[in-house]
Image 1 (cartoon, rainbow, N blue to C red):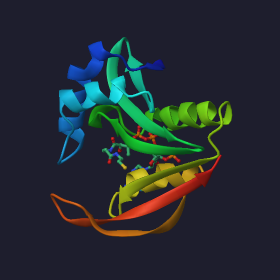
Image 2: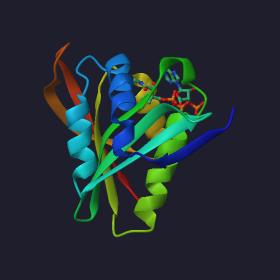
Image 3: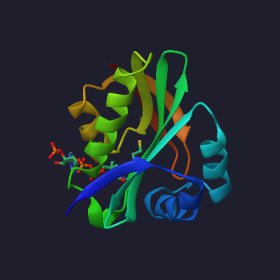
Image 4: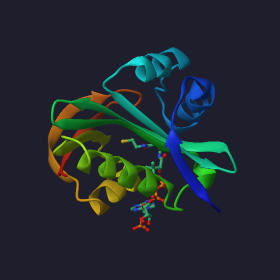
Length: 146
Ligand SMILES: CC(C)(COP(=O)(O)OP(=O)(O)OC[C@H]1O[C@@H](n2cnc3c(N)ncnc32)[C@H](O)[C@@H]1OP(=O)(O)O)[C@@H](O)C(=O)NCCC(=O)NCCS
């Protein structure tokens, strides 16, 4: 299975919003993805297999920090290193730019995601109590020095 990573564009928002509905209890709408893609601070990448989008990842560039907004991979494509490829791509982009630190929030029960982030050197730096809804849950704040 060959996985390719490419920039997300406006033609992708319908498919990506569909992936979000499968992966999250509070998915983003097509409009939200469109606004994200039109935002100069945003950086969104898709993972494709045979030209089908199977995952995506986004980041906001704020001064010298990168804020990871979302990472999602379709269930049937998980545990094949696709999120890892997306994270490696974003870390590479940060290294080539002025971004020195990367941060994100993750549900404290989301062991799969935490495992992937820890693999790339993200460390827990605190909790945002009841940050998530449906269901209500604390967020772990993670940081990585690039
Ligand atoms: C989190 C997510 C993006 C990971 O995608 P993925 O493509 O399966 O990730 P990868 O294949 O690159 O890596 C998975 C790793 O987690 C490990 N893993 C899988 N299930 C695990 C579990 N239950 N507990 C601990 N580790 C687990 C795998 O062994 C693998 O580690 P390895 O690379 O050292 O072998 C995917 O599960 C997903 O889309 N989840 C729903 C959306 C979500 O929660 N996104 C994160 C928001 S913060």
